[in-house]
Length: 453
Image (cartoon, rainbow, N blue to C red):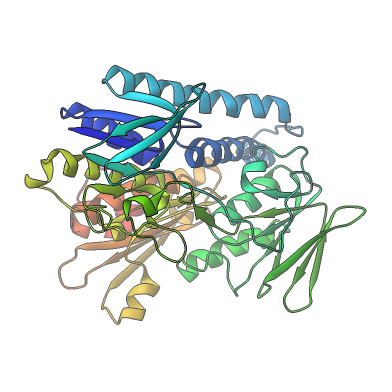
């Protein structure tokens, strides 16, 4: 069994490791960075920058903890070196692990030249190699979306990948896009001392999230002097003598020193040779898959951002594992399909935001009966000790059975705390299972137990 994987991101890496452990001959093709560009060029660097900003935030509130810390503007060269070190260390350790498991790694670009053939242009080689595969995984990820009206110059007008970190800390940054990536950049640069304006095409930030969660973030933005320009769809960006101007559909113009595009991504599918293998894509370029992550060609799979499902590294990695299990035949034994509705996600703003499963607004729209309990961190001893009592835990459960259906957390360490609720949702646990657990005290997780009661 020869399993060829094009793309070394979370989906490709997990598929390679799982298939190799189960006896498959695996070839992994990656032209950039093992671990994935979206992960190690986007996700990890942004969180490293947010961690630096978090130190400044702690310094600002240190007086409430009995001491006063002073901070300076971040050293961009030190920050850039730290981010590079983290990404390279993660990538090299992953590559060593895969090679140790017997995975063949080819550094170059791969494309389909038939339904069982993959051509690889290996770095440093003039002639393409031709691989014959029993099964193929396409996992080439995505790149930031740049609309036709935006001319990105990497100086004043930036994509997200040009902001890790930017050439300079912007004096006044205009963020276009109020989804997860957009609000993280608002928080990040606000914590670095930039003045920030957020262009919001709708009437709330995070339009896909619980309105109460979005409102909590908006309140924090406004309290820290972030300018929210709501109901404003950007249609043009122009350079000026002093910076940039963003033009909105309704005639409003927002001026600043820099502009950052955070309006989604596009799949990296154009150069894959999909037509030569008869693989179907939708109008947006995503590869259509079934519950096994198979394309319309059964032995060709797609995972990660390319599949058009939830664009989360955790989801991509789980897809990779499930794909490998299907390829080697393990799906015949106690195989559970990946349930995208039960995937936990987090937004690394301040306070952090995390959710999983069914949301209150979603249940209301479906007419589903639910029980909602909400407990603020303001009553939690550990939150008071840490000097950050912002936010709340909201738990959604079935009123008849007590089964946990979902939950949202706004507050410090929400990305870690959501794991408790995610496990409950995945395992169909009841609220009693959470409230009866003996948690550490004092701990922020006490609020989850209180919500379960």
